[in-house]
Length: 286
Ligand SMILES: C[S@@+](CC[C@H](N)C(=O)[O-])C[C@H]1O[C@@H](n2cnc3c(N)ncnc32)[C@H](O)[C@@H]1O
Image (cartoon, rainbow, N blue to C red; front, side, top):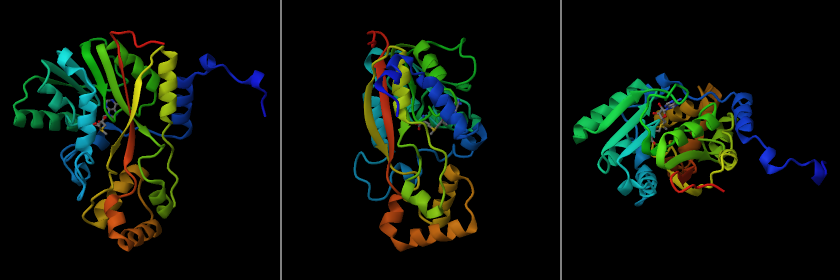
């Protein structure tokens, strides 16, 4: 047991390095672009977007509305959306500002975004095939920089610095809370213990070291496993997070799925996100 004198001062704790170590030790490899390509066409439109029986504000729509409502769009002409996916936020934002730069490293996601933009007549969204880790020095510095559900990267500290350098007014991002994308009860059924996502507390520590005091809120989205119409869809969606399931685990999961249809329809507890935002122009510093 260390004495109080031995404890490190807050300023001495390198939260960015702790995060990088956890990602490495947990062998938590962010999904490659090819994995996201395969999910592009139905993304955000599937049953998990609006689970059966969900009340207003309970689907992904509630999350999107909450995210949008925190943005200073009335003061902004331009928005950079990092890890934009098929335009979940970029497209509604495009209706409110002059220009949106939508960045993603999945060509499939950007193609889907362009398809949806054309369908909606949104001509002010520019797509960039680029990764968090690439050089951004030629990219627009926007009024607002956002990253929604796209912040699980190897080096979160570097990502934060990039967002700050590309925003004039505000940064807004969301980061997973609770260490896992799947309800621990369901993981227990299949007997798996996947790598833990570093805690959002580390993100707040990194911002503290950068002299930033953000607003932090908790948002929910339905479980990705919610409202599956058949067992195979449910098992495949789980395997996206856990990797392939063995036959015995699949059999236990099937028994769990069949035992309680209401429980199965929920797909476990909702996903929790820390919505973290701060003003860049007003010196959100300590
Ligand atoms: C969960 S989706 C989120 C999409 C959208 N922002 C939303 O909230 O619906 C994550 C997105 O981040 C993208 N992504 C993942 N890693 C990335 C990286 N290293 N660089 C750029 N984009 C990345 C994926 O291709 C995917 O489109």
